[in-house]
Length: 282
Image 1 (cartoon, helix red, strand yellow):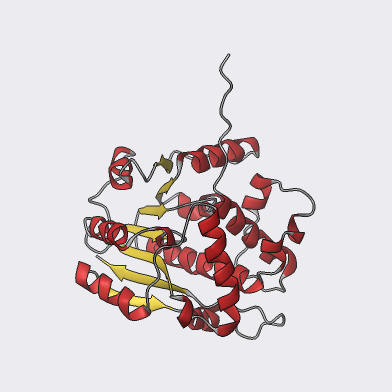
Image 2 (tube, helix red, strand yellow):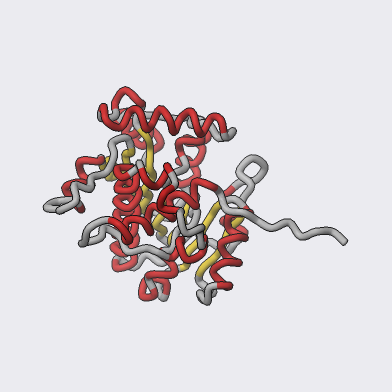
């Protein structure tokens, strides 16, 4: 009898989900984002908070919750404007659909990621009593052999409808050619659609206190066989978007996130430098 292969989620997806939960458990209120769904699905060992990637990465944790909050604020704003489709490119263990019942009632959500991660996520959601509504679509894609765009269209996505697309934690692993190809495909969306994509600054442009941690992350990613390959300055990011033909181009920095979400905190929580969010329209 053939043994069933048990799918496992991507390690990065697990780590970021645990960071979101750790924020709720250890950081002072007000919390930037209330998200413990991933922790419930992962059900880690009791000592998970003592892991080095949890214990010594406070600024990275802050970055993760800040960008997640920013993306969710954008998604909700888009929904209020009447946008009816939300695509998460590199969805990981994102739990927007589980925590925002009002939004999910108005949206068709398409979560795109590696097959094992999505299969594991769906299985764990059901095991933990979460409903999977008909408007939530899991779009498994082997990015080395398949086109995420073609798989999205096959999943029932309506290219004629205005859409909000988020893509975080992905561009680090893509070549410039692959990034440009992704941006060109996104210009096929209906006019008025909005994209939000995370890019990463070169090491030399990070704050000094963040550089050693990023150096360790670069070495760890290479050792794991998933090297970081793409870093861009803010000017390069804006130029790429302009050359492709996007409109209303904005870039959101760590300082911007600090001004939005971290004023007057009592715990000195502040996001690490290094990540830039590109927001633009079609």
